[in-house]
Length: 251
Image (cartoon, rainbow, N blue to C red; front, side, top):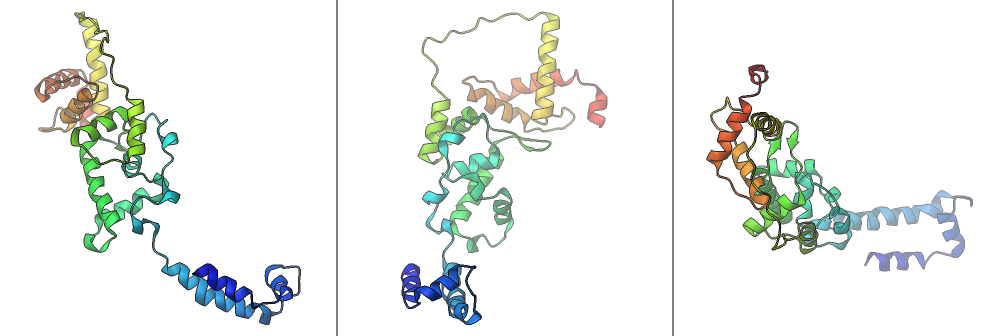
């Protein structure tokens, strides 16, 4: 409709007047531009303002579709990237701050249904993945896919295909490493590694009554096809944390 209105308006203008309108090296009488300026202001600009937001049709708009091949090559994702990619959109088109502002609104029923859906999914992601001192920790493709499979989350097929490509199924004849007994020094070294990762990456603090670290670590273990209960994990975490000087917890 807009194109037709522009064509109809411009066909009424002579070639000489068109040259004056669109070329700065010609004389520029104000009256020659006034009609065109009025048309721009009243017709084109008003129609542009009435144009619905791209998300009005959902997340399938081709102009905002994610570059899945590019994102499929990433070693990790931020929580926001993983969230937006899960619905098939290029992350730059829906800002983290914008979505956070929608999540804080008390009138959720007044925001667009697509954003209502995204706010709910955002909460799922935030409750699932661990947070560190500076924010949510990076998410690996393998961990992300394992969670999608676990809860049967509806994910954009192209993004899921990239995750699947990055997470090949283990071979049936995979070699199992033999168990080894650890000497005292080796055992202490491994406990130090556990202490550093658990305390710095999962916020484990043995001085607190409860900690979400055990559940997060259990999820990570299950992601690689292994299993360990929370009680066992907590036992090793406490033993490892005992190696950390008390001054660390006082700080």
